[in-house]
Image (cartoon, rainbow, N blue to C red; front, top):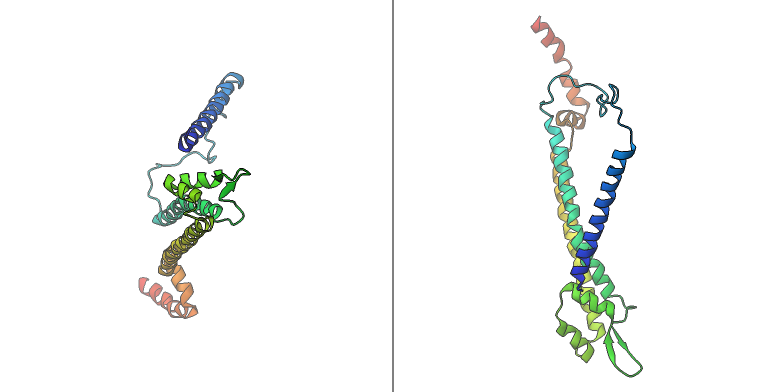
Length: 209
């Protein structure tokens, strides 16, 4: 059985057991819990208050900015999974303490199962394993190549975080993260703005009268 088939089998087994567990508990609750509806049990329970007016109201657009930022940063987390897989496998393959080949007492050389599995997961050709066994590719060269891939992963995640932080700094500098941009600008301007704006209020009130 190949590795991909094993992973799919484990996922199907995990999903099937989880769905069967949930279905069993729901079915068990239908038979065990009492069915006694009353006025109190049928009341609104989420907010504790009956609704007033229509629910079709216009939400403040500031909630849209917060939700959009959450979606952006939440989606960015998904990009960590393939990077973490490659980084972890590269770290295992470049470990100096992990043997690449085994040499038996009879003098036969066999490839380490861990290294063979990592090569297969990376999608490397079988000819590479044959070259390692024949001595054309030394274990130090295997570790050196894995180390280069490891540093490439580190540089890649560094560029990823740099782009993310630059975008975050740009959004913060524009004031898009401020809940009320006008109040935030007034607070940053200092007390000079309030000194100029407060004397005009009595004059405006007199004109309205």
